[in-house]
Length: 335
Image (cartoon, rainbow, N blue to C red; front, side):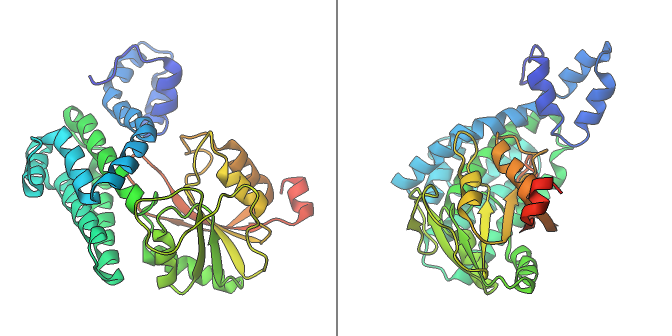
């Protein structure tokens, strides 16, 4: 077992209820002699959630390593730490992944991630770049569909490998795996409400702004931090003290606003004077990070008018919503 069975009940319970089906089973076992057995049975699954929490620190490592070396090289170096000798080629890494993890699904993820990063480093056209990115998204989707049935002995190793790929990919592209088809569907709803442009105060690399432009919406991309890759012009503007949108044709776009202790999501809602919000992330029930002020404001002041499931990394449950601002009377009444 990768995790000790003496894991505290509180932490164990918090993590386990997030996994598909695990919460229901453990609720049935809780308080019985089988509860300890259940904790052992799900230890491998919980290893994944431990990796997810560890990814909060891992993201900073990916950011710094991508700055000093190429994106693809950064991932190769970190994969070598996991599965193969330090001088391995990309093909040798993929072969080692296939041998160690016993299937082509994980290998396909690694190959797709390396291919997408190679294209990101090149001078390829936006069409080629989007195609390689969406091939990666399909590989992640296939892995997510099979992740729950992986043998326990490889589950935690697979989780660590996925987190390694995710941390580099998110730095170069974006925290969500939203595709142009998802944004095209959302753009129809936005245009029906008179929205022709968006402001993104946490744009990161600007990848989402590039994707929005492909479905006909312009994005005012901003971020308080520098990223190693810029897909579009991103102004270095902190949310705090900013005014977001001065006209009714501009909506607010937030994709995975930074988690606690940063409060960018809530600050953006307060700085935005418009009436339409596009949010990609987890719901208040799914979120592993403390975003209570943001989700509380969503619940009180905004009403979801559209929802779409999107591809997500295994262990995450992000989706896409469009919100409309409630009237002052409705917000005060909490309806």
